[in-house]
Length: 113
Image (tube, rainbow, N blue to C red; front, side, top):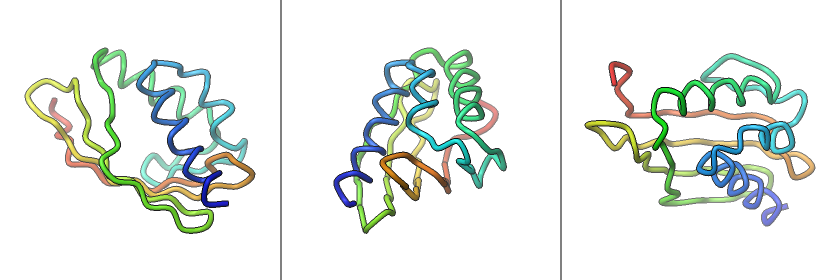
């Protein structure tokens, strides 16, 4: 499971960086739940990524650390392409059958950016 969980997280970041928003439909489970967004389903991620890339077309993430334990993944990311800041994000996932099913996240990104 460890390799599968790591691969799911890395697929997500690659899709985000490549603006491959439709890939979220395959990366996230149909019953996916985002705790920070309080939304369900992979379509909520597509919409979130679209909004972020519309506001910041150069936005991309760089994985600084990744820790995998069974079906859980924790990552520390730096976010580039946001004017006047380089936020850090901490994200935790639960993976089921190779797809992300639940997400928790914290960010240092200023909302006024």
